Length: 324
Ligand code: IPE
Ligand code: IPE
Ligand code: MG
Ligand code: MG
Ligand code: MG
Image 1: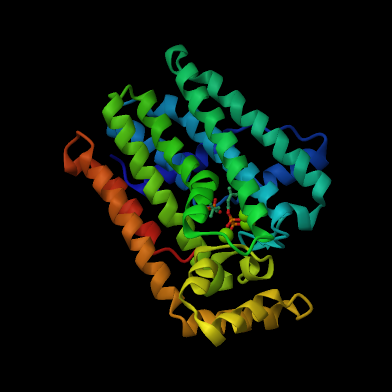
Image 2: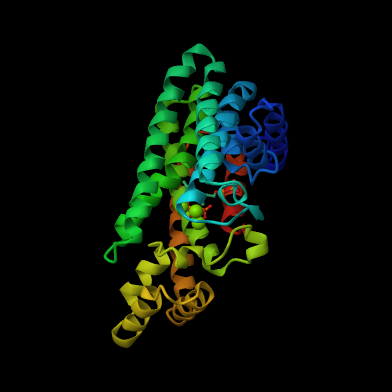
């Protein structure tokens, strides 16, 4: 299997080859603005890696890889509207640079384009891949809705949170691996295992994102840190904090979170101070480690030589150490 950076470079080339018309500019400029600098390109690389693992045709899988990446970027554009996020990948978010109307339509166009790429797959793969893709897109929307519902709830449990991130984040990561494996005609058992690998990795990935939202370096992270605190997101850190805080600490936490008149910086500092006192960072890191090791056990169960899976394992390890 080719290493991450080689596949990532192939993804970059394929992104450059995607055709987005020039007019109307207000529709296509924000799409290019999002797609061209791009992010880490993890999802399309996962599609390609899964396909290579089972000796499939990478050229064919690239169509599914593009579908996944364009779809992912669409979800980010809409997510920034929902999360009132001013910065994405170190530059103003589409909603901030243009407005919500522009962000909605750019996103819709990307979703429709992403579906279109799947028609270039071999005929035998179109049906199963389209099935995975549409099911996943619905799951992401369900997850996003739970994420917003939870903003105004105080009694969200860790289980509910895990289900929410399974839907909004882990499902797409799992689907990328599943699509790659299906395109390579892997066995049902291997498809199931690579999918489970992706699901656990996706859970660890979102837990890590929530952690970076509080403790990351804003410049490296490329997003406004503390935004989850400002928008009352029920992250693992938040829920766990209430679970372990007792007495005075719990009412102080409630006060810090409930205080909407405070300016955002002061709210972030107050909540972060309490997270520090409750060692939330360590709790989150422990949970991340647990989901990560579960993911590796599914990777181990795939019926291919361990050497062939090394790049997937390396990528998973790198993701756990990431700063952005
Ligand atoms: C961001 O995903 C959204 C989450 C699921 C946390 P990435 O961190 O993969 O974003 P980019 O594409 O690399 O910017
Ligand atoms: C992302 O969750 C989920 C999506 C499906 C887009 P977040 O809202 O935490 O992602 P970021 O931090 O904005 O990238
Ligand atoms: Mg969000
Ligand atoms: Mg967000
Ligand atoms: Mg986040």
